[in-house]
Length: 217
Figure (cartoon, rainbow, N blue to C red):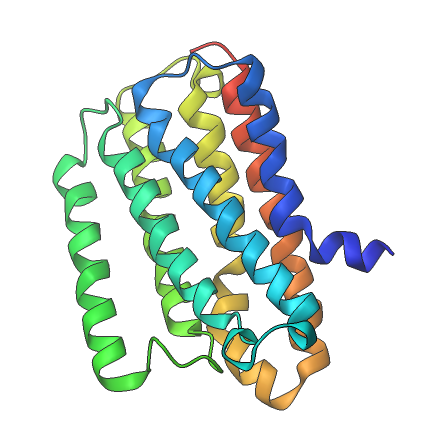
């Protein structure tokens, strides 16, 4: 039972910040891409989990959900990039704008040479790891900018909670993503256990986003 709950955490964890949002609808503009991410991620993850658990009842062309994780990765990076770029910070503005170009370049090269994006039997560990790495750079630039600006009340801002949750998520999962495909091939049980680690980190990310919606700006 507990494993089933954890397996579906990619869906129900998203409902936590969305529930808080029902009562805290007035949010700053820079959080709009995060809100959009939550809604779209809910649709993608719900579809992926339904396919994963009920594929025997579905047509053959719908029995694989791995391409949805690739789409989710690209959409997540896009939304959080928009979030970081539109934060009102005085430092590292150019660096924040370069990272999306690096991501686009990586996607182009990776899926032209190394992997097939639309391969229904393959999840792109390269894509997920690259996304986590670049998002971690965004998080580090945020903290460095805060230190340079000598913010006295670092933990009071809404954006702080989003960045903290995202930092935990990408730090925990970078190596999970990087080695996930080899683990699937060589040790499926270990791969499944490591994805549970991902799910716990995803819960923490959503709790942090919920906290950001709740606190005052």
